[in-house]
Length: 194
Image (cartoon, rainbow, N blue to C red):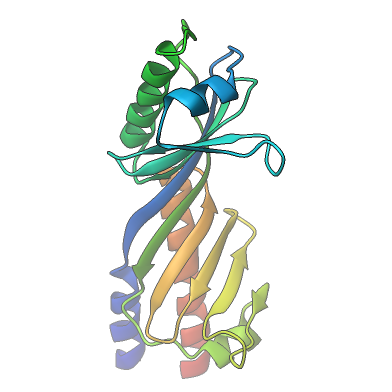
């Protein structure tokens, strides 16, 4: 029982760091992608292969897909504040080509990618047998994929306790998914100890 309590305490000490936020917004204005590509050196635009333009922002380092409809997809940021800053930079770039955005775009987070650790060595073979919704093929990839239904999140777990979490849309969902992961790991550990 003492070993289980030690493991329980260890799994409560999780740390997560947001690595990427994918967010969308609409400027509710049409954008000439050809004109934007011609006037901005930090763009990639090839309409024959993809209908959007990639606009690279240096600080905070990110990339924004700009579509002619005025829809944006922002990637590479690590906080909502950075997303807002990047969208403002895009709006400034668009003003230079005559697109005046008069609304404050509503930002919708589509996905948060975070990395961290449960500070515990994990037996991935055991977890793949004991947890539902897992995929583990160690001969192809050293991590175990574990999908939570509630809250919706997908974890990539490694034997050293490191993890990547995707699929959440806000801090609360991220925290809830980590709590659920810890709870599920403790249940497996407890079952093995008894």
